[in-house]
Structure formats: structure tokens, C-alpha cells
Image (cartoon, rainbow, N blue to C red):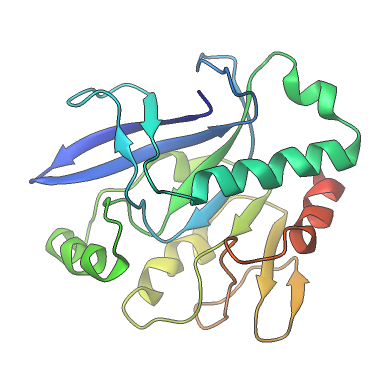
Length: 203
């Protein structure tokens, strides 16, 4: 299984933390795993836990959720293009960390935004946000007054020297920190080669 996370029910709502997309399709998480970078999305969608009421990393039941497989395909393509495909399959297991503006699970963003209001100002966050990453791939979409404030903690506090995002308005891949009003194109619907070449330079 390539997709793992910790699921927790908090005040009646399901949250997903420490989401990992492993490059090896048969990966089993352990203490020696290597985080190769991170992606920041809006919120977890419709994917579900395989084991309910479990606070440990567990396989994710994807359902109709396309984001995690899309991310994995992008990363595998980057490793192939870099010529490091053998490194990708060797131990330790390599994974991409998935971070979110907020971590409440809902397939509909509008519903998730409404639900997260009940947890403000200190909504539950993933401890992984405190880590230092080799690179950050931003995928939180365009300006939206209802989610813009959630972007600020990443813009102000994220720990990395390498930033990657596709500027939809200017049709260019950028390597700077986006601001809350930039149109950061989501990875779905984006031609992968537009960002893969930037990932290759880093890995």
C-alpha cells in the first residue's frame, strides 16, 4: 500500500493527519522512512480509514479520491526523469508528506469550510507541519476569502528552501513562496511536466 495516514474523530468529525504518499507500492511505514518533500493542499477529501478508531498510521481507502494517486504519479515520473528510479525503490522507504490548510475530511470543500469554523481559532493541525522539508509543492488553488487565512501559517512558518507552484494567471512555474491572493494551480488538471522539471532539479 502506498497511501498511509492517521485518522482521528474529533468532536464528531473525521480528521486526517500525517498523510504519506509512498513511492514504493508495497511500503510498510517504519522509523527509518525518508520524507523527500511535502505538498500543501486544501483539505482531505473522501478517502477513508481502513481501520476505524485507530490512532496509528494505517492504509487509506481512496474511494474516488484522485489527489493522492496524482501526487504519486508526479513523484515517480520525477524520479524516472532524474535517472534515480533505483534509489526510489531501495530502502529506506521514501514518501511525500501531505499537508493541508485544514485537516477535516469532506469531499465537498464548502462543507469542510463550514465544519472547520467550529474549531477556530485553534483548529487541529498536523505535527508534521513543524518539520523541515527538502521542497514544498503548493496545490491550494486560487484566492478564496474563506480559506485565505489558513494559508498564512504556511507562508509565514513553513521550513524549506525550495518552493514549487504553478502560477495559473501567468502560466509559469515559480520557485518562490506564493501569497494568499496568488492563483496556485491544483495538481489535478495541471500538465505534470510543468512541475516535474522543477522537482527533478531538487531530488
